[in-house]
Amino acid sequence: MAGIARIAINPEIRFGKPCVKGTRIAVGEVLSYLASGASEAELLADFPQLSHEDVLACLTYAAARERRSLVVPAV
Image 1: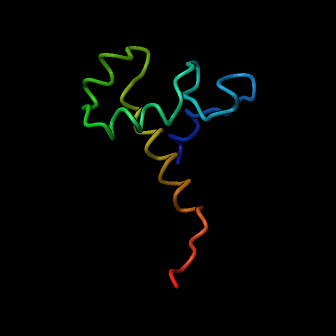
Image 2: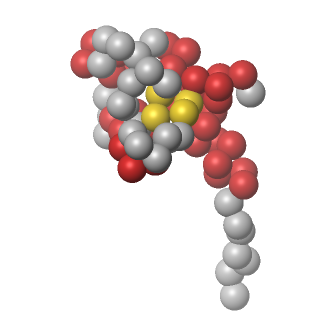
């Protein structure tokens, strides 16, 4: 998961939210943008400091976090 190396958590930047390294753009912002229906091309046009690899890193980070989530069975 080399892409995750593009994500940084710094308590002094965005209150410690995971962000794309070298930016103040949070992983959650990228995911929300895509979840709202925007295409990757639109995202990259609106945030020219991001690259395709940064977007993939955000998705990889979210997928890894999801795998680590505690699963509570339904009763």
